[in-house]
Length: 403
Ligand code: CTP
Image 1 (tube, protein in one colour):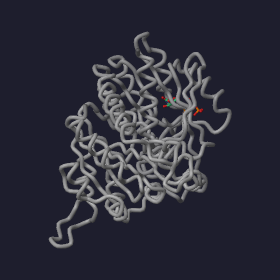
Image 2 (cartoon, rainbow, N blue to C red):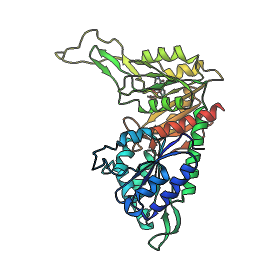
Image 3 (cartoon, protein in one colour):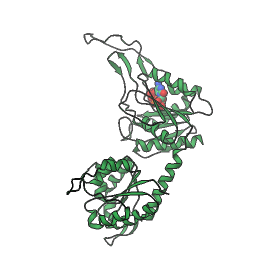
Image 4 (tube, rainbow, N blue to C red):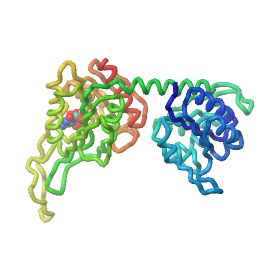
């Protein structure tokens, strides 16, 4: 079941650390390759010898071996792993993870990990319920960390309540679920060709100045990556951004202006199964940009603007029955009404609404909070999540639509 999977088990200083031994044994039994990283305090609860014997690998605790100076690279551990599971995760470690504190090898490995991260909290019930702990857990959830909720039961303190680390068998089930969902997702969109627009557009005023907006392209790039990871062939038409993207199924076409983006999309759309229009396209462009740099010696200077072509609306006009079209609406007021009217006007299958009134949503953030509204006016509200997790939700909606 877990053959070929590389799993890091992170162990922190909790009485539940003994359960890490069972978890490692279960993972090995299911043919995973396991490397264990421990915090210094965890060694007081369970020995590295036990965990290295069970995992068939050395256990990593320190940044280097004092005798030989051998460096233990958290970066290569992070790159090696397909999954990192921190069990048990103490309130202290969870708090540090939520705030980017990196004072031991487990935390630097967490920060370097490119893979999904699971954490199984273990602590006393009052510590678990404390608003600070709950806030830290919210931060971690919004960053895409999967929390394996602690169970109810008798705690080491003798108190009874929520805080006991979930049993290793249950954690193993969650790991199975994760990998089986991942492998069925991987091919859900194979053979589909999807157009994605992303980023801002720049509308030239003169050779050195432009009208732009604060879009960074993060949402569109996360969508392109998620679609490709699920097997789709993606053409990403991107306005100017500083982002990089590298996947064999993604072809990027870089454009600057709304007019260039419009042309690229109309050229491509007919050969696609659908499009997601996440770009923040300028609505207006200078009527007659100056060929030369405009000098500041001018007393008054105004720029006459004309509307740009609406890419979404133009694709909506030529959209065929078998194609889907998804748009975005970034609103500051009357959010739902505005989004519904855009959905109709542009002939979209669904629209992804984000409101600038929601903290953590919109431009230049790593998170987003969305509501999906479909053509039948069904609305689905999602909580604040990382843009990668939001991309997963949107792509899952597209898969449902196609099926
Ligand atoms: N859009 C587009 N081409 C444009 C303007 C917008 O394709 N010239 C797309 C966006 O990518 C988004 C959707 O249309 O998917 C809605 O964009 P938004 O800027 O919210 O709406 P507008 O139609 O531009 O209306 P307004 O800015 O007045 O709210």
